[in-house]
Image (cartoon, rainbow, N blue to C red; front, side):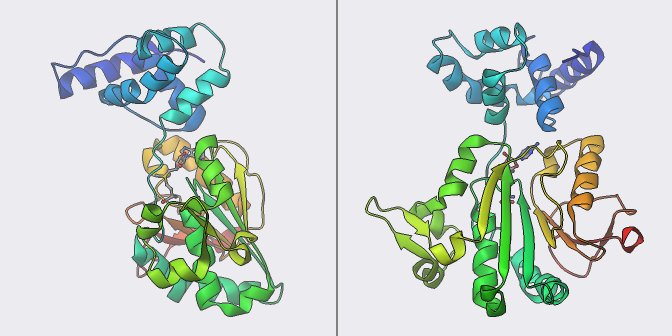
Length: 296
Ligand SMILES: C[S@@+](CC[C@H](N)C(=O)[O-])C[C@H]1O[C@@H](n2cnc3c(N)ncnc32)[C@H](O)[C@@H]1O
């Protein structure tokens, strides 16, 4: 990892400008540069409070004095397991079932009818929920397909749910949620139809939907893990990336898509400028793009 003094100096100046009372510790800048390099997440020095609050428990669990001692120790060794635990701690996992319900309305009424039309002769549907967090996005899509497109129940449906963060993936893999998590976005009918209550009071996704979802760890900055996707959901992930890394990820996503016309859904407020790769469908609410025909 190359330490870039200019970048760090700019960040310090920005943080000082934002709040003259907050002291920025010298350990923070190099760590945030590593986070950006390895994950793509660009967090400014004004987010030092986040570094402190997220890393303090890790420092304590390792018997270190505080988060600053942890960062000093990280800076003295090559990137390894502890670095990754700290990088992952800086991610934001916020999600919920049917998050931004109008995106799912667009999926139901506009995107999926077109996607299924293309996939009908194959009877295989491949979807990628990239940056899935704890898996609610993948489950929502499975529920939508099962309830509103019954023909796919006999197809080979593969929903790839990937994320960088091991901890969130464990929950996505189990597809197990608390009642409170289910209440965020699901109707009581959807809950009783698609989840089974467990002896400990948690709820598990029913097997007929769970079999469609495969969970894997994947860093979006790495080459694509799989190709041939008919639909990619990449929602609320790239908002934290700088333009060059966002572009790198979008080129990989483009490569992963099955053909011209394959669909990409971004977060509701996200947009892209890679017009050579994707066509934006502005009439549909919810960040709907299709792979550019030029590459078919
Ligand atoms: C805010 S959540 C979005 C979850 C879901 N897509 C949604 O919209 O509800 C962002 C997720 O992106 C993941 N993430 C961040 N950087 C990543 C990277 N470089 N590769 C893969 N996943 C990443 C985080 O771990 C986190 O779970």
